[in-house]
Image (cartoon, rainbow, N blue to C red; front, side, top):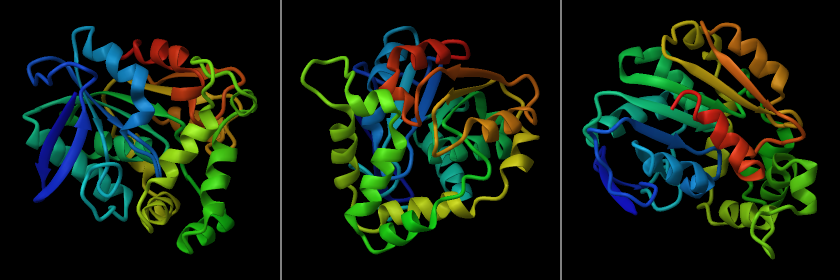
Length: 264
């Protein structure tokens, strides 16, 4: 099911996991990574929506069906998440973010601790430095940028196949989502990630239950950086997914869901 919000005078699109959104239930916002949209959270959102919670899998500004422009910094994304909560009638929510979305979730939890009840960080690294070839090719709107993200983002097993639905291929599906983004959106996302320097400082201010879900074979956000960041968050837990790459929600959807159940 779809929910349309008005934030800053702009249309914001979200899906609700197949059930009407109810702000009186424990709520979770799911936040996608650079160049992607709400569709990366297919299994996880449906589970929590049908097991006592309410979910909003968001299209960030300029992504999917949400109006642009794309926001140009991680703190701006974090502030926007709080305004989304205001628009949907939520005093508190859990935040689950992937990659760029994990930085936005982390920043929001550190700067607005009274608004975040739990924090899930998937494929998170600080600093999240972006390769020069990726910044340059995305700035030129070259398809190379999409190919690089797709090939670096999925682990070896996913590249060979292994989709749960016979006849479908994760990498082609991921590439199609990236191809649907408007020109300039991916570059804005990557520049926001590359410029973000406040991760360690905001992590020290996080006060809610926090879980890192990491792919052992993640080459885009190396687990060693996430493990170092986790040490700065009191009580943070870590789940390492063996043999999995950066896009664990699709490569290992059940294992990712099982991990998130620890805090949601």
